[in-house]
Length: 334
Image (cartoon, rainbow, N blue to C red):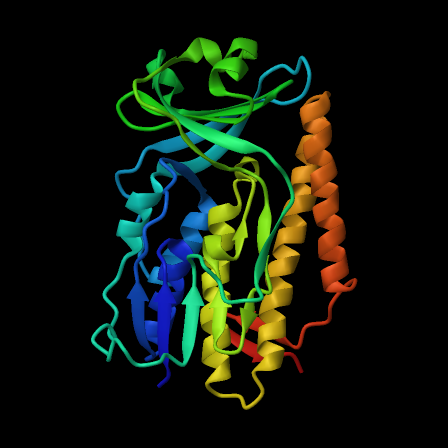
């Protein structure tokens, strides 16, 4: 069976490694250091997808659970309470929970792999990053004033950006501030500010705008996870999409082992991930159209529109695909 090197960590890398290992490929995973999110929200569909990939239903035992969302979105909007079902976990802990031993770990480390899956930068030339926004996020540790708030997540749009409060364990949690600095957004806040106290410690900052590497693949290599795409955290679909990228990367490599023509498989991979970004950009646009008025919102909306136009050009309209996923395998469309 072919040798596969997977460079990087995260759910996309672990999903790809696990599926290829289960299929008998010789897989080596090279772990790389990168900044991890202190807390992410996994909805029921993402939990189910992870359970299917790793064949486990105990992955989320003991994690804090969320049963409702409280949303105030739009100028002078009133809080709207919506049912929700999700768990909260740090990105580092999630990686530990899905980490598996790979049967091919002891292959010759200096041997040239048949395939390299990159979930960590850098990517081979001529791949470059295209980004469609300028917004940054700051994650700040907080303490909840009311313990009854620990089973809800809170979202609020403001003139200078938006806030997302994600509770954790022991009456703690994290505040995600996108746009202005956390203290400036909290000064505007009517929904979230009265519910929290900022904890000691510096905020961790990271880009919060959608972006894509292009091209996403080439002869003998595929990019997935954060090396391929990054989503706006507002929509909550980044982790689920990353898992699907890992599934598709593994399926492409498995199919390539049985086909003489690899280029159509790479075109399929490029097209599917590009469509995923396009859908995300359109969903973001719906939120940024209604979040608030003002220069910050107008600027980010304009950059989202540029991203939608870029995806449309790259995809050339509605592409016709030659393959489809059946379970975890890629099969030709008759």
